[in-house]
Amino acid sequence: MNKIITWSVTVAVAGFLFGFDTAVISGADQAIQALWGTSPLVHGLFVMSSALWGTVLGALSGNIPCDKLGRKKTLVIIGVLYLLSAIGSALAQDPYTFAILRFIGGVGVGISSIVVPAYISEIAPANLRGRLVATYQFQIVFGILIAFLSNYLLTGIIPQDWRVMLGIEAIPALVYLLLVLKAPESPRWLLLKHNKEQEAREIMQALGSDDIDNTITQVRESAKRQPNTSLFKSEYKLPITLAFLIAAFNQLSGINFIIYYAPRVFEMAGLDASNALLSTAGVGLVNLVFTMVGISLIDKCGRKLLMYVGSIGYILSLATVSWAFYGDVGGTLVVVAIFVFIASHALGQGAVIWVFIAEIFPNSVRSKGQSLGSGTHWVFAAIITLAMPQVLATFSASQVFFFFTLAMFLQLIFVRFMMPETKGRTLEDVASELSE
Image 1 (tube, helix red, strand yellow):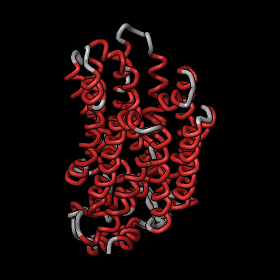
Image 2 (tube, rainbow, N blue to C red):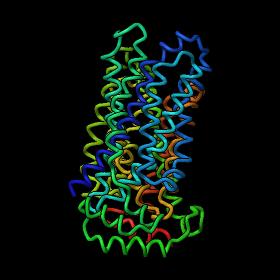
Image 3 (spheres, rainbow, N blue to C red):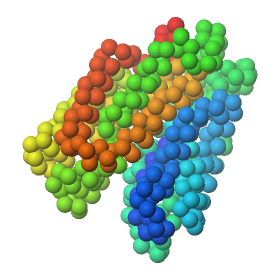
Image 4 (cartoon, rainbow, N blue to C red):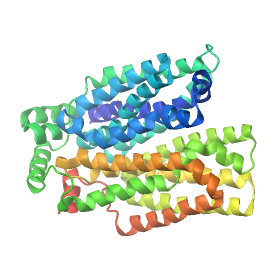
C-alpha cells in the first residue's frame, strides 16, 4: 500500500510541472514583447498562447500514446517534453522558436491531464482512489504558487531574468523524469493490451495491492462486457455525456477567467494596482488551502456532495460579484466573494473533475474518455480565455458574472439529476453500471 501511495504521488509531480509551466510565463510576458517588438496580436495569440494550443492538441490526442505505448512510457514522454520546453524556451533567440518550444511544453500539459489520472486510478484501491488522483490537482495548484514565488525571487537576477525564470523548470522536470523511469507499468493496461497476467500480478504484488485474484477477474470480465475499444458507441453514451458536461461546466464557472484576469477584475472593482496584486496572491493561497481540504474529504464525503457544496458556493459568490458590480458597491465585497468562489471551486470541481473522469469509463476506453473530457476542458478554457477581453469590452462585468451564475445553476441541476456517486467502488463496478 505504501508503494501505491509513493508512485501515485511521484506520478502526480507531472501536475506540479503542469501548474508551473502554465504560470511561469507571466514573468516573461512584458519582457519578451519589449525584446522582440511583437505586436499585441502576435504576442497574445501566438507567443503567449502557444502553450495553450499545445495543451489542446495534447489533450485531444494524448490517448494514442497512452494506449499504444502504455501509461509508463507516456509518463516518461511528458517528462522529456517539459524538459525540452524549459531549456529551449529559456535559450530562444526569436519569438517563433520561443512559441514552438512553449507549444511543446503545452503538449506535455495536455497529455499529462490524461495519463496521470488514468494511471493513478488504475493502481489505487477504491477507498483511496479519490484522494490519490486528486493529488494531481493539488500539485497543479502548488506548481502555480511556486512559479509565482520563483518569478518574484528571480526578478533582476540577470538583465534577461525571464530566461532564468523559464529555465529553472528544467530542474523539477529532470527530477520527475528520473523518478518516473523507475515507475511500474499499469497492471490493468498490461492485462488489457497484452494479456500479460503474470507480469500484472507481479506488479500488483510489489505494490501491495489487495485481493489481486479478484481484481484480475473483474478486469477480464469487464473486458468481456465492454470489448469495444471505439469510444463513440451507444453503450458509452452516458459516460461520454457525463465527462463532457463536468468538463464544460468546469470552465463555464469562469475559473480560468478569474485566474488569468484576477488583477484586472480587482482593479475594475476599484482596488489600486498594488492591492489588486496582493489580492491575486490571496487567490492562489485560498486555492491551495481548499484544494487540500477537498482532497481530504473526497473519499469520506464522496464526489457528489463536494460538487453540491461547490455548486452552491459558486452560485452565491458569482451572484454577489454580479450584484456588487451592478450596484457599484465596492472592491472589498468583490474580493471576499472571489475568495469564496475560489474556495468553492477548489472543494468542488477542482478536487473532483480529474478523479470523476478517470472513474466513469471502462478499462478498454479509459484513456479515450480521458482525452474527451480533458479536450473539452481545454477547448472551453481556450475559448473563454481568448474571448474574455473582447467580452469585457462589449458587456459589463455584472453581465459577465451573471452569465457564469446561470451556468452554475445548470451545473447544480446536473449534479442533482445526472451525476452518479463513485466513492468506494471499483472501476469495473462503476463501468458496469454506466456502460450498458
